[in-house]
Length: 152
Image 1 (cartoon, rainbow, N blue to C red):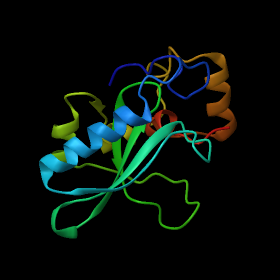
Image 2 (image 1 turned 90 degrees about the vertical axis):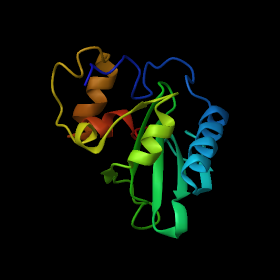
Image 3 (image 1 turned 45 degrees about the horizontal axis):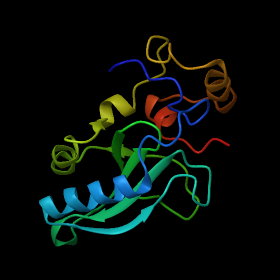
Image 4 (image 1 turned 135 degrees about the vertical axis):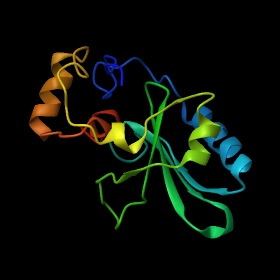
């Protein structure tokens, strides 16, 4: 995995690098390719301080609901289980190869193994002091929680 770029957390970030409209369009296209359907899309920073867009998608035959996460500042996506309950902020990362293949044309796909990596000084070397302070304050343990967060 490459070092995370400055602003990935939403602090000291460039303006939206990936708009909600771009993400929504990409999700609908990817989900159509695998025969599923998009249930809901929530833009980043819409009602809470999420620095990522998210889509809830049903895979074919209603087998499973997948949560597609997309950083609002850099074209990076990952997959997670839906929240266990209303307000659950934990991310349980998982892999979804079908969607990963479909989305990899437009996005860097972060697999569950990489998302669950511990914080490594080389991976966070480009982050700003504000971002590092937020990580320390929140006791962030995984790279995926740096890329996809709800810090305020």
